[in-house]
Image (tube, rainbow, N blue to C red; front, side, top):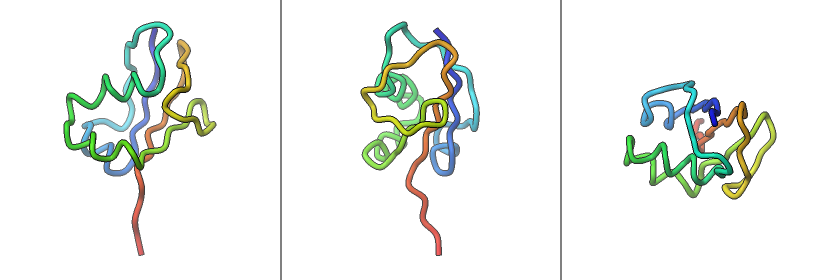
Length: 81
């Protein structure tokens, strides 16, 4: 199946894209998607514990199932002042 991934802030830099369609196995979860993306950007792995996920605009955790056509936003912590 195919999902659209949106990467924000530091994750956009580390993954090398802001938006990308990704093929993933049927019955995959958000955590499975993360595991598929991180090997291409090893430093991103350190952000896993603080990264929030949204599926189609609703916050979800890593165990949330994915469905064909979903849009998944990856949102790392953001600092500022």
